Length: 99
Image (cartoon, rainbow, N blue to C red; front, top):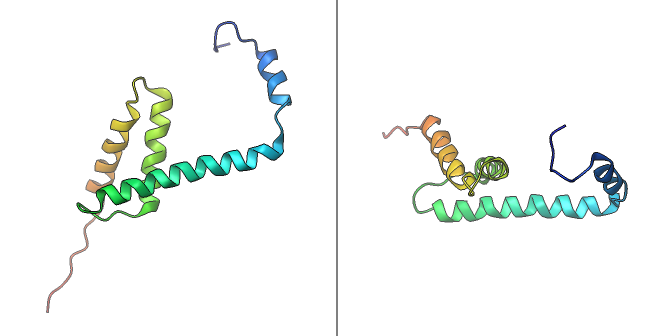
């Protein structure tokens, strides 16, 4: 089975049994808050160029951090910018009619 050399599955399971479930709620809430604040930061940085909703930026932020977990050298930062570019390029633009 794949994993880290020198770490047994039994040891991992033993450690997981010692997790206090009451701590999971604040930990998960703080992780969510961190990602949400990162999305808001991106929104503020991009505001002079284009207004983008925080929900869309939150999804893009999650894509970037997921990529950081599987790619080396924090390439997720480039993935985030790429995903944002693709997302915004594919959105239809609303055209206003002038009377």
